[in-house]
Image 1 (cartoon, rainbow, N blue to C red):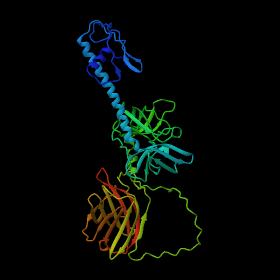
Image 2 (cartoon, helix red, strand yellow; image 1 turned 30 degrees about the horizontal axis):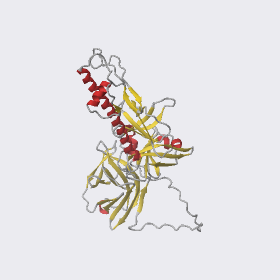
Image 3 (spheres, rainbow, N blue to C red; image 1 turned 180 degrees about the horizontal axis):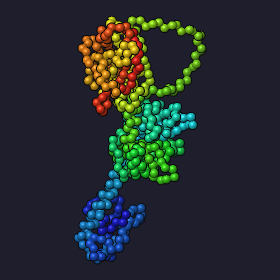
Image 4 (cartoon, rainbow, N blue to C red; image 1 turned 90 degrees about the horizontal axis):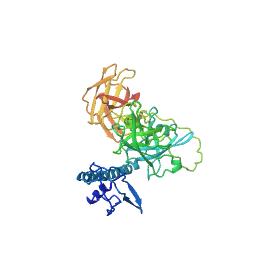
Length: 469
């Protein structure tokens, strides 16, 4: 950058910060002459000369007459130089701090598929063990592992996938992990971004991640994408694109081959649905890691004894299902899928135990319905609200046949209790509350969550099952 010696000399006299420039003493034969414009060089021949390992300032030809205006402009030029250099140093330090904060949450992802191993990048977006990556990294994978810096590899399950956006959410079995927040808004075109990942790990190694820097080149909102020019390579897929606040504004998904600086990431706002739906899925690996154990000797074949009918007070199964809720469109903070439901009758009380995959919280609601065998609509309903810990029992009334909205006419029945212990919901209902008195009923178990329209929508349910009281 060309700098006038007069400006730099002014900075030195004004005790400006030492920028590594050695002040050169004035020569006795040096003559300063002007060109009629105060403070401007008629022929700007200023520059930095390298000599003896230290930068020195070459002679500046200014013009006849030295004016006070020239000194003022010189001071301003010096100040601008100092500010620019300090700003560059501060920006570099800011990026370094940002990377240092984000590094612990960026993982290398390895997926084993039929065609071999796929390697990419992922990052933790929720400290309970949830990561985002690119869908093509884990596509068709029979086994997925993720490894954060300075940690052992972790088995991961694919919790949610959106093939259209090419984004997937993973869950690992560890919690309290460092994480990167997803940005709630879109970045601006021209905004500076930083990309973290493990490109070409098989070539350059995967002991530490790679950092590149660029800007947002374009927003393709309808496609849910942002274009950026920071360098990416195979292995960057699934890595975070960070803004200056350290938030993830995108998930790297690909680049245009043969072109330089044309890369794409899924906008964080477009990936929010995948990220939220994944929060409902528990960590349940399809096949745990194999453990070598001695093979036991084959036991003699024994015919199993017939199982007796359950007696009074014994638990009987209502139903069970897997960890994925039936309704995936409802966003809930925890997984409200029903693992199993069972019942027993003792001392004139019906006990129902509902086991979920996670403890119900927030605006969740546990619902039980009873109907006579073969009836089209329920006769009784029990609703338990997690937010207020309020329980309502009463007659089921279908309020809207088209949308299947219902309400409950409350009945005061002493002895109804609902207790929550971890992921278990224990319900006690006196048999006298279920009228008419009959030995057989059909029961349905439902979990629901309050939507933005202030309506509780069913998240998961077990089908109608006949029980004997």
